[in-house]
Length: 96
Image 1 (cartoon, rainbow, N blue to C red):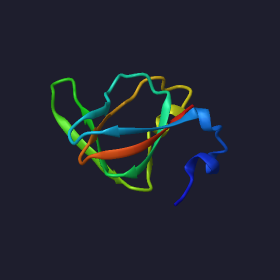
Image 2 (image 1 turned 30 degrees about the horizontal axis):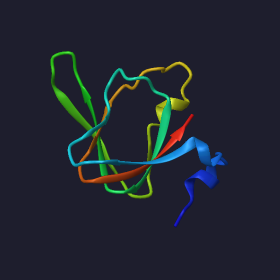
Image 3 (image 1 turned 90 degrees about the horizontal axis):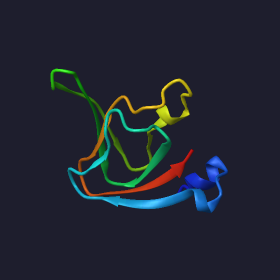
Image 4 (image 1 turned 45 degrees about the vertical axis):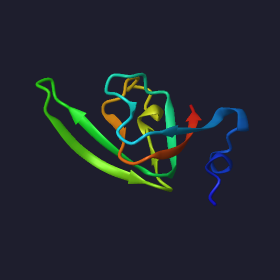
């Protein structure tokens, strides 16, 4: 299995495996953008919600993919979208 922590050269204490249930929010629009996530198993849906409450689908991510890369943008301290577990999910949290 691909070891994403080794790939990024992160120390073991900076990573943690986290589990989410189906339909559970991983993060919401406006939350602090300080982490990158690697999906070990399951599916994540990214959406954005307008000020009028309309939701737009940005995409789906599955096992072996990364999301939350906005945490690398110094000019974007807040999440600009929502991340929701579509299935039960196992992911690796990478503190940035």
